[in-house]
Length: 324
Image (cartoon, rainbow, N blue to C red; front, side, top):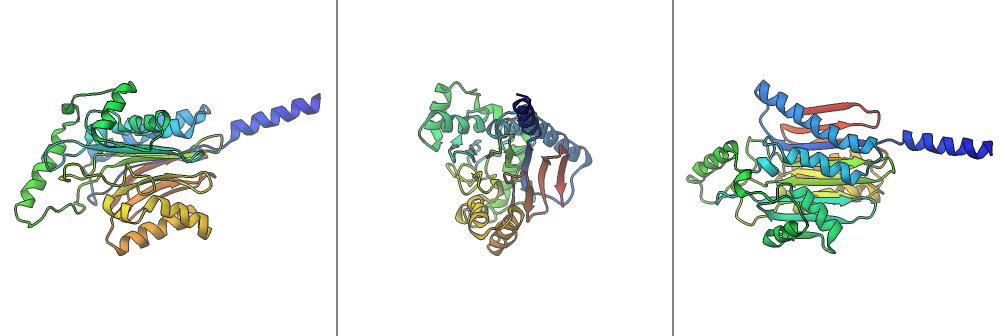
């Protein structure tokens, strides 16, 4: 009896001590410096998102729930190009995309081109949980979200003066060009994402974005596309991407990192470096990735001036960064 009691105690202690970790990004690109007040605001909001997700993990919650709530915090902030802070299309609308993936089951959900769903990441999670599908777009996604009981807001909710000004600046530049230019500007892209490891050893990843300023009506980037902007597999890693989506789609960036780990036995750090600093750079693809593996090893790799990012690692250390 004593042996059984001691065994149960050891199991309980190991369960409590199981490592948890979370890592986020809120966009790559950017200027080499920022006004001090704005920089402080970025750090504060990144830390808020990390703590929200980590709180769930410390209570024994799932990586999926942690990823979702961390992204919701960032979607609700006008600082980032997701949810409330989404950029405008060339026609002056806000169209948002999001995806989420469970590394335990390989199930995933995504929405694209939505305009009235307050938190697109919640809609992506609902697609995964409540339908047999992976990706719903446009009106169909919005009708589904309403039926699923998600919060719907008027389009004006997403209108911010900062993003509207960016659109006007983009339009002014187009007058001197023969075609629309969607190359990465000096502004932060602001796409948000998260990867998390829970106490059961499961990992998950999610991404949410407003896309690119001046994008064509109906354009989808990598963020709602599983394997391009988001990927999670307990056997390898959980990855969320940020950058010029067309390049991330063409090179299946998130999946490629996982595949390199699976087939070449690379570490997550080696795989992310090879893809971001090698594959993407060779084709002038700019951006970055964040992620972790099932052991809690964290990666934050980017090839731009900066990437809003942060983590709480398996020791409980919280860290946020913007520049190199």
